[in-house]
Image (tube, rainbow, N blue to C red):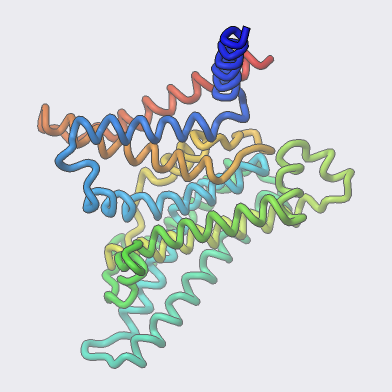
Length: 345
């Protein structure tokens, strides 16, 4: 009898685990499994390069700026909207901040001059991101233009402003911000620290503050949010302003990493950010999603693209498999989510 009872417990445990993995709430678990499997797979296939400390650091520097932009997209998606202007805002911030550094730091400048220039550049970059986000929020919340159209328009607008400032050329900044993009603290890359810090702050805000409750309710049912006393206009303006601020941070990280800025830098970043947010479990219709899922999706996508490039480049000498990997993973997860939703219904 005891052995039969033990067998039943094991059977129930397997059943419960399967149910959890295939449930809508199991997205974090599914992503965690995908991350572990991808790391194990490519560590076996390319044990000489993939699991090395150097490769991990390289992936961190590549992924952190995209991760910050993905958080900006995820935040706006939680309200039922989207921000397509994130990369244009980041590039404009990099152009203006880089121009300030170039103008204020002559050759042989002292530490005091450099510190003042960095402070002004950061202020200019931050204000630029806030103003871009505030304008997006005004268009979406006050003028009531659909978010996808409003931010598509400002994407073109911000790119146009950047082109007018630079005449289409790159702005080569001083290395005063290189610590932000390439530095580390006790061996941890600064961009990763910034990404984790932003994620922690936003997670606390969304889960523990009134604003976070309002964001989720607005994304779930705008009419119900309005009748419950929530100022939908104010919530949307705050959300898009925060998105602009996050875009500014990403722009400063990029400027620090490559010591340059251009209007057309990171042309695929918008699509990547949207892809990561959706893979992370953020509902494109709003109202549900967790930022830890966005981080896991970022890691999975980075492992997949880097690992495939290493494996397939060795076989064929080609290096264009990132786009294939992104599309394949997106379709796989969307099909899985469709199956899970249909199964739950």
